[in-house]
Image (cartoon, rainbow, N blue to C red):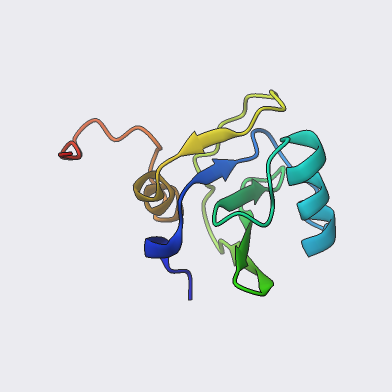
Amino acid sequence: MLNEATVDRVYLARGSTDLRKSIDGLAVLVKEEFDLDPFSSSLFVFCNRGRDKLKILHWEHNGFWLYYRRLERGKFHWPSDSSTVPLKISPRQLRWLLDGLSLDQKQAHPVVT
């Protein structure tokens, strides 16, 4: 089960990713294209061209988790920007995305720090 409490950061791979890639292929993308450490406590989120499938790569203690989500109906509100720089979002925004909402919820209560 994905535990957001242990996650420091969430990065979205903008545009689409070939989801035939497994853990090793996605880790290489994180390291070489994003210039980030796949062994960090961050989540790296990838979406297919059809916007109906996601993969989330996550390192925990001594191994990788690879989460896969497929929608039976509908699409994820995914940023279509073709930039190779990943989009940094909060765990809260990831939850919105997984729930079928936009990353920018105008009616959400602001986070108090």
